[in-house]
Length: 500
Length: 91
Image 1 (cartoon, each protein chain N blue to C red):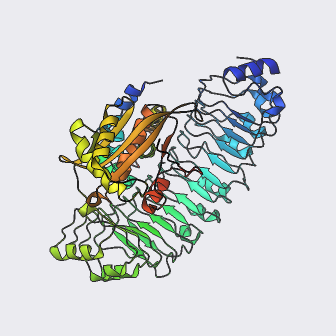
Image 2 (cartoon, chains in turn cyan, green):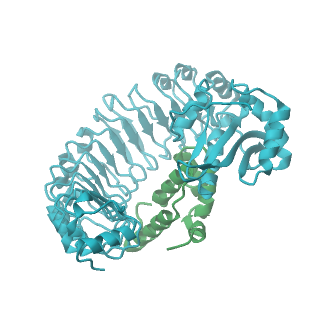
Image 3 (cartoon, chains in turn yellow, cyan):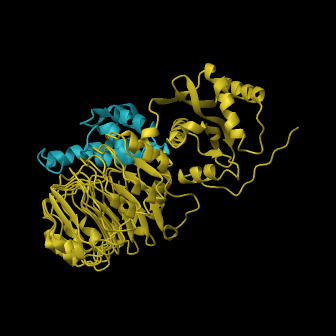
């Protein structure tokens, strides 16, 4: 399709609902979203948009860009992810690009990158690139590079060109080694090498200012860590290790460490006193050493699926520990006693399985109404009155546009949530009013509230609701924190009641 | 473009022999972090389906499922494996 003048370009963009009627001149357009429009080609007249800074072409069927694109001399952000490019268009070299997202194409050629000297953020993930097809120039501004899910066997040819990069993602390639050239990336703070076939690490890695290092799902055997003064997170999951050791000076600021499924027989003890998360699940660890007590900042400990029989008293030092996963071990009675004294907020061996969530039946309404007493005991605006609550829920049950979900443990209703359909003039459509989210005391800290919320949100999406709203008692701090953690945003509105 | 029903029936994990619909249901019925919840789908410790499965987990958590993107990620993994000669040495 060819557009030769502004008016036809304008009509085309209006037809795609990419601009509004108020746009009268091409220079008014600085951002253009043409994502998911089923485009097979882009108009040559695009060059008219001289003020264009951001162009989103993601999710189309493009295989190339018109040559005229090189005239967009203000274009700094280009998104061409999820198209059908097999090579990056050569005209990109003429653009002042700062950010390029070409993820999810069929790229086998990235040679033009050599000339894109101003790039700061580059995403080439989910393509078919290998080391021969990646030719970088000296990109002094490049800070973030995502090359995950490609076919790179050797990173050495291009690593030396990435000397200023701070975040590098090489996950899900076919790397067998981490070359010494990694030492050239002297500002590297985040490195993701997950899901490759790396057998050994170059010691140069430990001299970098890394804050996050993911080495999971490789073929590493022997690891001797030292240095890494800035490291805060280290993930070693799914490597079949023969040995793992830490020098005393290793990563003094390490906060998160994980070595799940690493074939370990002894418990790993990184020297950092700052650890907040430690995962050693799915190994063959038979005992937990007393030194675990040094991790006084630990919040979450994951020991699931080991061979642990007893637990040391030193666990009592972990005053901040909130979550412990320890099922599928060989815990003796004494260990269970230690756990009961420790009393973490979340412990998987106390979690009940077999709790099902589904739409309430009429027979569930009575139990659900009684459950509301738990909620109304906290919310000072409401009073507990079984007759009223039963009547209310019964009405709701028969409402065609209302949903009542219950969590049931056997025949017992242990949690519930309701949602009613309203019309919102603000949103111009139907919205959901969420109420009555409550879980029985003895079934809390098992994630039931989250499950109920996930299910009701999915239901709202299915029904096409434009928003879900809820009210929570300002004094119920747990509820406020719960909704905030799960993506709800607190509004500036207050709720008023009037009883006619 | 595939329909929602077609994408729901696509196999997302060969190890656990689970479809996209199975994975969504499992994630929506779980409050576990990804690392634990994914084992309910894969029943293994492999990472073959990691990219697509992580996206499904995130989508399930927030209730909005983009079936087109899921299909895209599954297809892309197949294409990549084919390109690598069916030998994904990193698995």
